[in-house]
Length: 89
Image 1 (cartoon, rainbow, N blue to C red):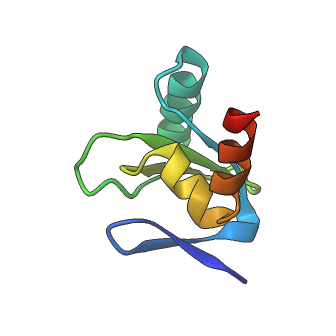
Image 2 (image 1 turned 180 degrees about the horizontal axis):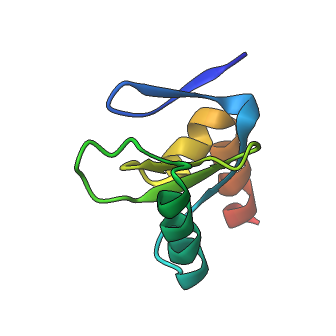
């Protein structure tokens, strides 16, 4: 099991993360609102602005104050290298 920091000392099992998305789109906002109503949302922002929404394999929604790119690099450290290669081509 690999744990990743999603901000403020909060950790999540990297194997359970299905997606890390930007919270600004209307579909994601609806998903977060529904999860809050159902009680399946976990707010790990410590009162800060939500910058990333993590969708777990069991349907739980995690809210983070870190950028999706930052969390992505923590899940897959070689992700940054792949992005740099694509930009240089």
